[in-house]
Length: 351
Image (cartoon, rainbow, N blue to C red; front, side):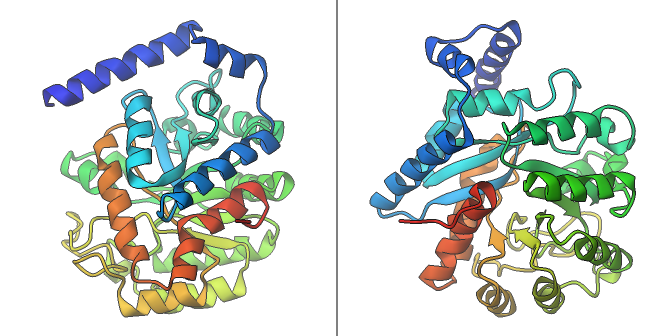
């Protein structure tokens, strides 16, 4: 780890410990004493989006990111301003049932114009075991009205390239999306009107189960993360623009984010170039451009940054901007921020 990263981690750890002790600045205390309503948050978000538009930039709302103590807030604020990112939906890891998703809410209260209160993602043993307090805690938080999005749940997950290289093969996760907790989250989305995110590697044998759930819960809002990501093509032969075109046409409750690996890079488990949506220079492949233009209201942008890779943020946003540059201006605006705006607020964007 270089010196800059060490210093950044120490600063972040100090802030994390301060939160744990209950220490807070006057501004943070004021936010804690007077929780913001959803309407208050939306008004602040609208002001921030407009401020970026006034700079002549296309605002981006990042719907997929994982929060942790190794991501310094000051760094994120700086990078968001530099890169024209209006909002980030930071979902913490679920490591403590008593804490739950509190760190996301604290962060959103400290910077109410930048961060979206998001419930914990399903990326730890509390989720993998499919028993215990995870479901109960997230249900309570989603029903509280304090959160505007539910974090990414790993139903089917191949180890990431970094996890594969580190031989963390236990991160190969398989949980039936039509199992008890799958039904519980689809129903929770219907009840609360909050969207939830799924990591669901599009293996041929799994597609029917997802489609069944989308049909059974038409009022649920599902964001399928990593559209265009294919890591084992022999097991994912049915998936692609044609499949998504049909599925999006049949299920208006399905959305996709475009959190993708760097263009041209290969997945170490297969050697396959796993970003199938972008050419090596970052432009959209023609078949993917056609798909996004056919369903411009169904895609969002995600950075997929996490505590072990905060420095990826500017590169990921630059990659997303190259993708957006392949599209007509109206479609690019929808995907960059307007679709996420509707999912988070329930309202269409008004200039």
